[in-house]
Image 1 (cartoon, one colour):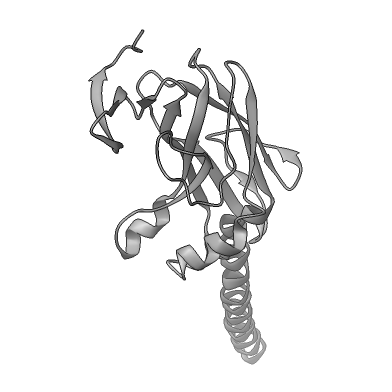
Image 2 (cartoon, helix red, strand yellow; image 1 turned 180 degrees about the vertical axis):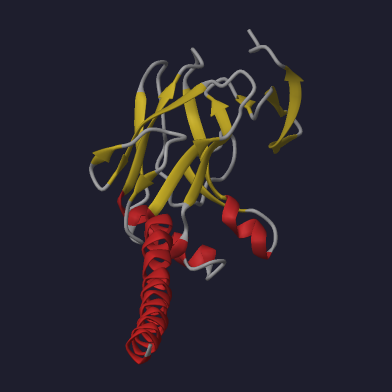
Length: 211
């Protein structure tokens, strides 16, 4: 009887120790697993195209760190990914473009206020005293223009100014903002014409391109 009682006590003690060790093992490993999952999520980036009614500029050939990437599909990159970010614009308007603005939108900034959108501009407005640093542009129909964020990265980082830190950005949206043609008409979702009394003002015409 004493032997059975002693054996029973030993088994009970062993069970308690085993359960304790299992508990420590589970508790000890769980944070590590979570950390790996969080790190994996932090590396996931995605680039989307903003919807545009009857787009006249095709955005294509997205590359990050020299690697071809697809729009709307997540991929892994480090925090410097925006400094190695490029894409191409193709003129599908059938007209010659003299001014083109593409917006780089950061949806995550909505968490701390309004959406922040960084404009990248090519060319100059017609009939305006252009004092900007932009060189003249003449983008012919079906011609392409390569856009790289590397030369604008320092300015972009200052623009974001910690909303959130630039290296923590995981989502980007590309949008064609404003296009001006050599005939002084323009496009911003719909077609517009230059106000003859104020060359800085454009008046809506219609959804179809003016002839």
